[in-house]
Every structure is written in structure tokens, then in C-alpha cells.
Image (cartoon, rainbow, N blue to C red):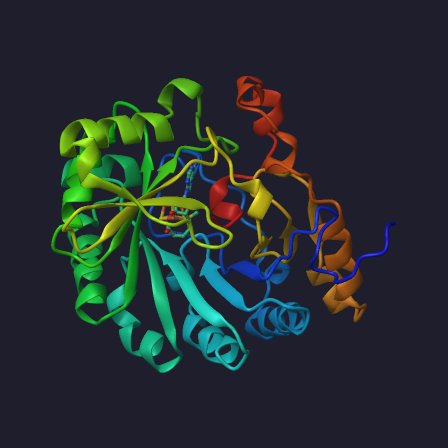
Length: 335
Ligand code: SAM
Ligand code: SF4
């Protein structure tokens, strides 16, 4: 194995300072693009990281250069010991953020404030209640919608995640952007990605190109400002002149951003995934429980990271289901 300067730097020199921790495989919604209709095989409880283990693993990552942690899932807020986990992670020297469906957010406003969790991404794929019930297979639209406003009123930095699916919500693109006229939020359109059991196919994809085409057609090309990409960006961001908020496009399928990837994922059952699209996993929970050095395992996981989308290096590779259907379902990865 080639000598690595730092265990979080891969063979292409990409530094992984951003750890996304999935706290649970469970969820209070059943989004069709994330959770297969038959559900998923949940890990036995004893195979999941407990609060101490999450903290201890995160501490090793932080000691090696991680300075940004995002909590995700499944739905991270369904975890009974969420507040305890947040409290412990807040003692590490990182920024803290969360991706949530928003349903339980009102119960945690005080905890978010106390422990410095300010960046909150909420998933909401439609502004129409019936469509929400259809895509999530649950009837919690009002709760999700009101909680988004509650977060904004409380001064959190809110981003809305929208997975676009052709024929389902691509007719709401401009409605979502119109929300940014008066609300200081960031809308992020995410290209629908293939995972085990989510019935993905290319015809359901709404590409970056199509999103921009619709937007410029509706608002006028001269009303659209391209914003500077953030460092290690996933989202290419824009703004409509005079609007308070902004919008962005996460084009993982049609226009990937792997060159600047700084993300590493830890699943709820303690496996490192070095790429969302990779089915290669490294078990660090077992190593931790065996009191081995987990740094060696982290180094191996980073070393194996491929240049682009876990090996799916062209748009054409999405034509071959064998290449993308052997990955976990998204709900058990942590998006
Ligand atoms: N439950 C939380 C939520 O929904 O925000 C966190 C977990 S969810 C797996 C994280 C993100 O992954 C969400 O924004 C969700 O929309 C996104 N996601 C899930 N399946 C996806 C897919 N097939 N393609 C693109 N994004 C997906
Ligand atoms: Fe649950 Fe989030 Fe997956 Fe929807 S996208 S099923 S809310 S984990």
C-alpha cells in the first residue's frame, strides 16, 4: 500500500474533512425513492453503534482532520438518545449539521440551539399535500411544512432538499424557487439517484440541464445569477435577482463533482462507505469493539476510494443496472 500523508487523504489528494454519520436505519416516513416498498432488513440492535461508540469513532476522525459532522439516517431525530449524541458530539471541535425530514424538529429546537447545531437540511419534495402523502407514504405534510417555517423563524440556516422525479414534481421547480423570494433559504434540487429497490431508471431523471432550462424560460436568463461554488461543493448555486434566498442543483448523475469530494460516510451499523455510490464497506465498529486501532481501517477505506462515483465514471454507466443496483438502499446508507 502506498504511503499516505494523512489517513484521510486519498490517492488523488482529496482530503476528507467532512464526516456524515447515519444515526439509524429507521424512519418515520417511507419515501419511495429511498425506502423499498417491502421495507429493508434492519440490522440487529446489537450491531448498531451506541452513543459512546458514535462519539469515540467521531473523535478519531476529528483527531485526524475532520472538522465538519453531519447527522443523518434514516431519520436521525427518531433516535431516542439523539440529544445525548448531539451533546457529546458538540464537545468535539467541529461544525455540526443535520439532514432531517423535519417531522420531529419542533421537539429539538432548544437542543439544536444549546449544542450549536445551526445548519439544517430538510427534505420536502413537493408543496402539494396529496403528492407528499404519495411520495412519503405517510400524511405528515403540515407538520413538515410548519416545522420548516419554525426553523426559519428561529434563525437556523435552512436548506430544502428536493429529489426531482420526472412526471412527479418537475412541474414544481419554479414554485420552489419562488419561495426564495421572501424566505432566506436555499432550495436544492437533487437529481434522482439509483439505489437498491428504488425502481430508478434514466427516464425518471430530471437533469441539471432541464432544471436550468425551465428556470431561465420562466424567470428570464437575465434574472438568473450564477453564484460562486462553495469549496468542495455538491450544489451549483444560483439566485434570482432581488430574491432573498437562493437555489442550487446537485447533479450527482448528469454532472458529478467527485474531483473535490471531501465526504466520508459512517453507517448506523458502523461501516465506512467511502462514496455514496460504492458498495465497498469497511467495518470499523467491530474493530472498535475488538479494541483494535480504527485508524488503520479508516486509512484502508480512504485508500480504496475510486476517482468517480464508486467506479460509475460515465453517464452511460447508469444504463447498466448491474453497476448501480448492488448498493444498499439509501435509507441504510445515510444520504
Ligand atoms: N431522513 C432524512 C431526510 O429525509 O432528510 C435524512 C436521510 S435521507 C436518506 C438524506 C437525503 O437523501 C434526503 O435529502 C433525501 O431526499 C436524499 N435521498 C434519498 N434517496 C435519494 C435518491 N434515490 N436520490 C437522491 N437523493 C436521495
Ligand atoms: Fe426517511 Fe429521509 Fe429516506 Fe424519506 S428520504 S424515507 S425521510 S430517510
